[in-house]
Length: 570
Image (cartoon, rainbow, N blue to C red; front, top):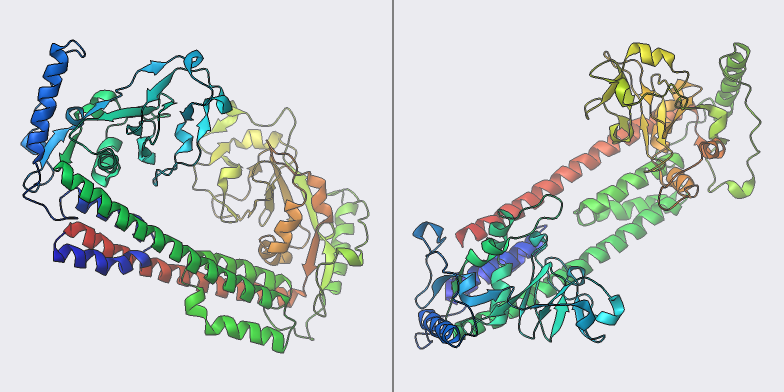
């Protein structure tokens, strides 16, 4: 390896450490340099690869003459346009079939496999790293399908979903599923070097352009055998493998160091946010916020922490810690009285049924103390609930139209809003008029009761759509006073509200939640004027979080661009 190459790698270990996927790219850089002859120095005393290829040909002729193998099918000559770069002296471009016997071991019937035999499945190999995750005996699995045999030193290549990059060298004899191909190396190639050849970025890109099969993409045998590879002298192969192993170990150390750093940052950040959430107003809260302010640049250099900050902002909001209280505000109790009056009016007008009394809120149900003027209420006391129409009138596929009334499903719930631009379905005005319930009005909330249980979104009417219809997995939550909608929209995303939902989910195969449990959910209700202040403050802080995310993206982009420029040099 020349001095320039050494300096290049040394200089950009730090660059790789800083970039989001830098260590992964550094590994690719190491392999790219290795396969161009730039990782270790060439030795003119090494037997050139051309001599090794002559020995292989002589051995093949001997085996054919002895009747031990059939005359091999000739491989096409490598054309100049197939060669991606110039090789060092002593190296040769070869096809895989020249240096290894692809799928070169026989199959074995399950009845002939010994119980202690190593049985390798594709899932036993970790993607990208190719680390062996598990070593099973045949008796552990008792698979009845035909298996391929392999021997110690064979290179075992995962041809199914080859982009997963699963390649290992067998350290003992065994059997494997037919989605793993045993490649028997010739005398011209070191097993470990062949493994790195098959893991290099250039070969992965080539393979991914060739794989066939949509659901189960795999590399075809002929494509594999005809693939071209750089072949150094055998002695240099060993030196390259040793250097790769050394540099990959250093990458492992970098990954461990980065993981430890990120864990430490996460631990400090979590502790700081917890102090903020648990602090009472006054010195404790000020001290906790001061710590975050002092370490803001360090704590918010990763998006995961910004996401946690968003959650904390919402939780502080619903605890009454985000904006100061004003004793002149009309208390929430007065707002509740107005809602009760409205509820009685709707019952008298026959628009809703008289609701059943809700259970009194017990002290042990209350998770935290509220500021003066706030009230703990049950969701059923401030909102009405409406299922979708589940009768025989419910729309089916034949009722779908290219336009009309929007028919919303789970896929239309995006970032807390019902969206109109995600391949929305429609039903006709006539079909919509047949339905008795499940019809949306402005600022209704919908909640999923099956699947992604508890996911919520608000419906906002626009110039084009003033209503819509929900599918059978949804429930409408309609505030009895529309002025509560914006605060409830924030509350529904809070840690506390989401924990209430999580506690009510049932089922493992299909997750679901009964609609009636929402009636009893607790809601911390601030005075109406304070609700407006809270929502405005949330919007301001969330916009700030968006700016932080953009800054992180920009910083990461610069590091990635720098590393890409280095790789482009190679």
